[in-house]
Length: 359
Length: 258
Image 1 (cartoon, rainbow over the protein chains, first blue to last red):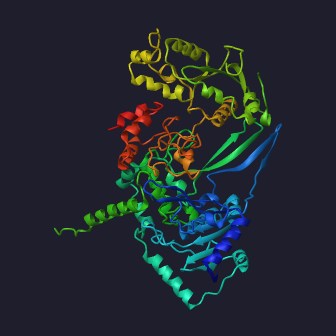
Image 2: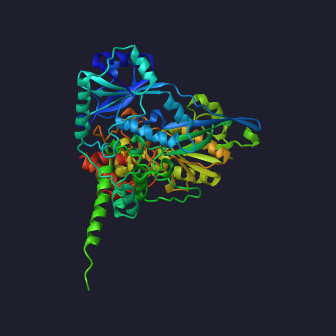
């Protein structure tokens, strides 16, 4: 990693040049909630003025730039009794501006699942390789819990990461591409004061968290609490709408359909991001549903998020951004669900911890 | 007629289809002639036996009957029963046929009052509005106000190729989130998206118009939780009831209301 410092004015010039010459996306205000809060999304930007550098959090993550909500995996062309399959792994280069540390961590987790497993995903690889990611730190929002998940800082997975140190940005340069781009702009090596300011900034972030989830031994607790009534309690609230998985930066489950074109001369295999909360997620041929109840489905979402699956070496995939919690109309959020599970566990501990009576 | 294309050497037969309108605006039938780019391919799948919007030819030897509209007169009941006898596959086509649709507003008032208001002094024979499945067995439902032509094409292709005919089981929220639409509840509106079957590509909500549920309930909706969230957000229950009743699509769930 190479460290540089750039003034905010020069940084604006740098971003503007990037945006003018590349297909670029950054945080933009798209609406205002009825409570007055702005709503942000990663949207295409055409000049630096469109980028809301002071944004809080985007409602949806940056996942869809790498895992599109809908994607044609292959096309089949029929000629008489012959057929051919067309597959394209081309991805147009994109510049993504303003991703948070947790968003980048989520991409690193997706890398583990989609690139480092037995069956790497070529489509994901193409998009990951053809992206230029500029991360930006931020002071935690009241409901951010990425520190609990240890994802409030990130050291890999981006091209450039910017820490706000007042009039300047402290840049962590993680790719030769970023380094060469920046050579055209005025930067300097960090001095003692810059380093102090970076440490200060990191402390402010570190100490700014208001939401903490105790995730110690959570995978074990999830295993023990498989039949907990907590799942039914929260499941009863669940609308089965799948919003949580759509906005999540690390949910990657999908459905696959194959269909003929209307002229019957072609067919298409399409992948759609899906959610384990959707009612037919675990329906198999013949119609049996392995997870018929809301609580069952909700439980498996928490299992995947907080206990992990074999495909990513049983690592938790939740990064603590709480987008699911903010987006859930029913008020289901990781903090309350996990705390509820822990309480279930603790009350159970008190009842067994009393010493056995001597006879 | 007869054999059509042979993708991979497999012969497929055209669908002998007829389209009939009952109490409706005929907008769903009109959708059949929409999406011009694929219209020739779409019509190639069909052997149209009876469809007054595109042909004056009338034949009674159809296998598939698309029923558009709800039933609101005795002569419609008889016509429908006759079609049921002929059709191998009877399709409730569009929201009115599937749920009663906007026409069901009529059922909120006594029939005499309605006749006085709309046709004063005229002898009108009319019945309360009913959906198609209240009268005959429905083999397949294609909901929507209007139906989505892309979905109709997909279903016709499934029928031609003998593959499983499916509708999305999940609600509109999935398609809405895929377009990064701001949730209408965040804007202070009641939206039926979390209850309503997807497949419309969130066309209303992505245009900032709340979903009124024209595609009817998704599978296993959680009406109790939905009512709870509307109350918790302090939104108008009158507005909610108005929306739920708009297409009459949530009638079976409205008993949950408190």
